Image (cartoon, rainbow, N blue to C red; front, side, top):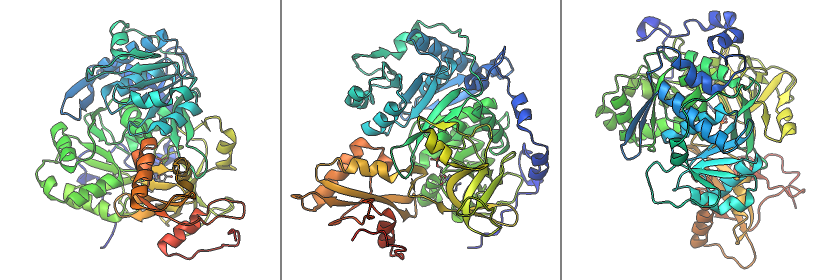
Length: 582
Ligand code: AMP
């Protein structure tokens, strides 16, 4: 296949004039101070994300504009204007205040993509809370690790998911209140520490004075995986809204008349930065679909809501490709004018497929939980080089460093992708792990943990992770997290976890396990260990494949050599084995 650049530089071809017409010129003129001025800030000083995404629109002609078109998994629909959400979040902020929640308290959500997730997260920001959205697919260990690490005070969940919380409650002494959102009116008797969202909201006022948070006050924690240890809490401050706002405007190219759809769940940073903050700070109407992936359903959503800008992920695009062109032909997708992707390398075939089938190429962009907003992107006015992540965003300096993180490498040379520190949405710390945070910076550079190259024209190309972290379907999974769960199984003595290439989801998780004396390998045992892992972990973090080994390769200091497991699995050279245990 010939992956020649897809020409988009002739703006006459585009149905809407892009917000960013000339990357180079705009870059030269760009100042974060100007973005700051486009946002409002709080009266009397301070910055609060919730005000920027909701309340400031209530002062404008956007007041009654639809902010959220919600469609439930059973086909229910609801719509909310900016004014509706402003009032409901005020109410919820009053509810939290009544419960004693104060500035800096950690408030977590653990629910499906229902509208209340947005009301609760933004209401919590209004009281100055630090919000932590969790995937509803998390098992008890995943929830416990996160809530426990940052001593969350409030958990907001649903009758369907609360049994998970009951399992771990004893291990969470800081958790004072569980708010039960019973949207679907299930029979449910409140237990100890539990209160009803619906009851409390009924009696709460629509008026609330937003806490005067400073731009540096912590606002959001997203947990992300590393090579060692449990997931770490990436902390962002209210100032991150500057990055969300600017990138939604210039990379996602949102315009006032757009209907935007981001398919990410708020449990992942894309689902907050670009499923809440970016679009709403720009006053854009967005669609949220509670249901999971399904080619027919997704195309139906685009057609029904006349989605114009669509932000999704490579695994989803590859699944759409797999579903073929037939479901596409059944729907009218002509409302779409711009499509973007993030989370994993977007293979050239997927970019070209979009151009052929949907009539629009997917614009890949790159960023991480730690960066808070898009850092490298393909823009509407530029040619797309299929397979490339694009060029740095305005105000961002990206480079490729050598293995000592000292020398910037020349075009074509492979090295460590690094960013000049200091952009507004840069993470402020790892919760309670300042040393680890500091270790991510070398001089002026933030070291991303990815390896990449840059070409002569400044396009960046992803090569791979510099560590053992596994990217499965766009979600990072730390091998240690999975290994820790596997060794809790009574039969497992040791476990080593790696990612192996997969054409659909990029990598799937494979676990190598050695057994304790008295246990014999069997298919039933494989099933049992997998079931055990599924109960505790996120569905995506569970090993797809499991193999028994008599013993695992270890270093002389006793560390499992995942690198060797991977090389052996893939038939690659074993490299330096001098530290291998005899
Ligand atoms: P997360 O912090 O979970 O959003 O994951 C960030 C990681 O996902 C990055 O460090 C990359 O390894 C990978 N990633 C994100 N976007 C891209 C992209 N466009 N191309 C290749 N890898 C990506």
